Amino acid sequence: MRKCIYITDDGWWDTDVTILPQIINGYEITVVVSERLKQLKYEQKNIRGVSKIIKYQTIYRNSDLRKIFKSFIFGMKEYVRQSIWKQDNLIVYLKNSDIAFLLLFSWFLPRRRTIVGIHDFIMHKGKNTSLYSFFYNIVYRKFDYFLFFSETQQNQFLSEYPGKKAFYINMPLKDFGPIMKEKHSPGSRVFLFFGFIQAYKRLDLFIEASQHVTSGAKFIIAGACNDWDRYKALFTGKENNVQCEIRFIANHEIAFYFQKADYLVLPYDEATQSGPLTIAYNYCLPIIATDIKLFATMVRNGDNGFLFHKGNLEALIQTINYANGISNQQYSSLVAGMCKAKNEYQKTTDFKLSLENFVKENKI
Image (tube, helix red, strand yellow):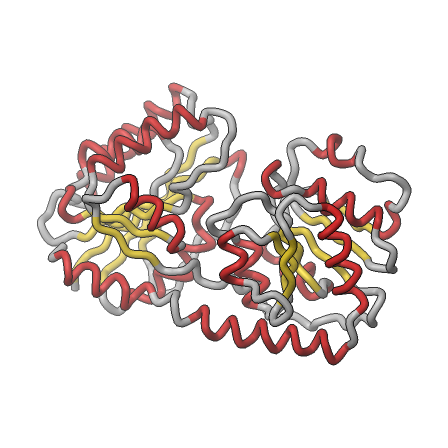
């Protein structure tokens, strides 16, 4: 059986656990996962069918010279220990922000047998974006084969690197256990904003809408935030209709919030993939989202949710008021539409078949 060395990061683990079980019958899999202990998202590292999981743990930031040195030493040891240079090993490297790993693997991973997985080719603007872009470009130029988790990201990459070979699967749906869906009457439905809060996700619109709706809608904000005081100032007297859970939401808590909600709201200015969206799909939860490209392909207006124009507060308020007031029969129709969309979407998440075809086609 061919050996597959899968190099990843704690931040990508929720995707790893959905795709690796698909290939356990075709490969002997060794997982190498990087963890920053002060910002650990997934404490338990278990994947069905994978017995060998090697953890690289550190307390330092990516820019800390101590981490760069430690990462380099660890990477060299595993390069030797896993016999990465051997002719038959398949390497899948999920690109992350560890600068030492980026440079080390760019130099030492075999170009002809390495597939680089990319979650974030289209980067959200933020601190050190230019610096990371510089190092990422080294990886993009070095390797030939790439894996993406959305068609949008793949197409953008190939337009900038037309000589490369790539394939994509849609991000597998995320299941966090069974839910007992709460039932709410028209006029008292619950709208959920979920996930790590960043400026481009426009929580400000969600909060402002919650303060101006004319109906009896309820709102939940659940996720960690580094700038909560800025958002807290937007409440203008209707705090009682908004439940705020501003903290990291552990995996075992996620189902709880999705069972309480009638809609997931995604007022984002930009997105190329979305974890909360795949959770909503898994639970057949209707979605209210902006009309950006990704959401317009996933949310069919009036069928499994509603779209509104990006950045338009009045449109969001009107959409929430309408969604809150529809009959139970109309709401059930949205849920049925979401279940149908879920079944269609799952046909595009077959990692096993896509990987087999790509490896065979390119003789990797």
